[in-house]
Image (tube, rainbow, N blue to C red; front, top):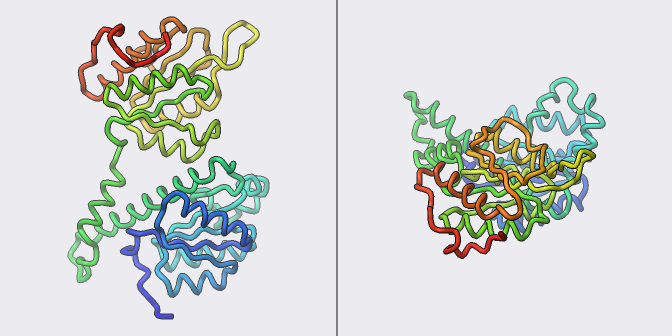
Length: 333
């Protein structure tokens, strides 16, 4: 086999190696990568010896590895050996995350403490969420690789014989990938999946106002990496917090995953608007009164229009003051 360059310049396309002693797990992952529409080159092996041979002879920039099926000590040595020689390669730990937590004293021992910062794909991800998780992991790998290209470009701005090795266009793509703060005019709509009537009308209203609506429906109630990525990639965040479980004092809790999604939006510093149904008390803090709109079933239309106005003000547009009775939003009133 002819030995080829394994440099950071190979990072524009994903060249993936899956290393796992479990052939069924390999097939499951490969099929998922293909299902998410990714045209990456994918190779696989069940042994560390063949994995090292592959990396030495074939351009590779992403390696999925199950450290448990391959033997933790031997697999960790393989990871660190490859990382020392090929700094641009991204490792994804394709493991049973619950098992790694149960064995965390051994899993993170010594140099393996670095694994705490590695990208992970949980083998026990629910089936309905697995493809979305795989897609998000691949996007995370691309961001990492883009960062490497950008760092190389910065270093090579200094006078050096090999300055021309980094394509300026590729460096700019890397910069764009790192500095984006959300796709323009996109709103992540966080809601309980039982609220179809509210959500359908609200979705339509937001689209009429010029927003693209992003939701987490495909992963149901599993707050996954995919959902986090959708929140990160959206420009704005709108949470519809409706009643879920009644408390002994007659007030209500909303769904826990809505609070998790709101926490992610705050962490990503997204402009945020909350619609809170009267009676819900666990909506959390860290947001101002101007970001929180309370509503009853009868007053939902008015609250939805107010939320849309707030989102438009964030976007720099004047709120649409059209008479609600003349609108065709189909929002339940």
